[in-house]
Image (cartoon, rainbow, N blue to C red; front, side, top):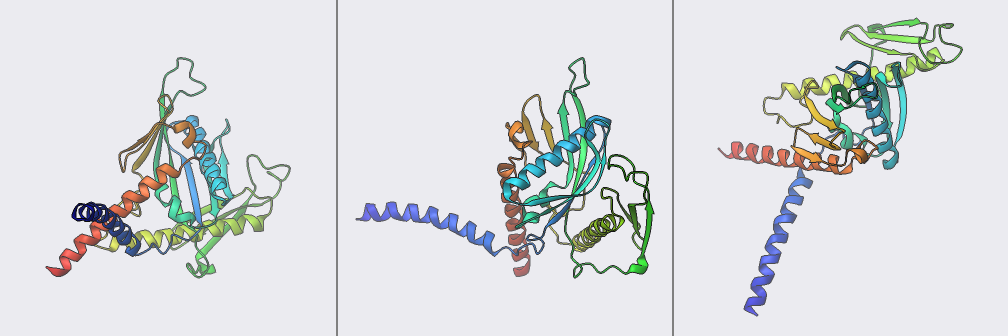
Length: 291
């Protein structure tokens, strides 16, 4: 009986340790934005047309992931490139707890691969930047109409017969902050204005969140909410079928599946590391309170 009790104690102690970790995570203060929909912006960076093609690839990756999660994607504004990529694309993702899953995607994404136009088979490196913002509602961000300058002009690029014939494109400038949003994807000026204001609200909310985080002297510097969107967060190496997330030193050799939207392993790993970082910071704050 003594030996049986000892063996049970060992297994129960291990289980208690795991349950304690789970309990600590459950007691972490939730991010109030986690349940929100998002506005995502992807822009081609260094690398010219190859960077634009990569930006298009990232957009398709997130679209496939959203489809698998049962979310809805709506393109808000885009600037296509000559060979089928995007110089810039802005879109919304709506559904259950979208921000909690995709908030880790902000930053510079670097790609290493052989472009289709490369005759010598040399690997090129290019990059695209991603910005993820919680979608703002009217109650979150109130915009004074007097703070807006709205210009209309003729659309350019793909768009059908109305392109270059009607003033349907809209440019909204928020005078106090200097933020400028343009939208020309819709044939209706009203629809373009509505989409532009949606993006503007998201940018203003994101700006307010970033300023709030930077003003806190004790805020932990995690992979979320640092405000540094120039940081390289991930490398997509196609010849090696490898994805590396530099924030948590994670390497996965299944890039072919990831680029098709299989993001769960990667996102789960980042969320776990972020929770560990939050627990460590919480422990430090408790120590300071008792000193």
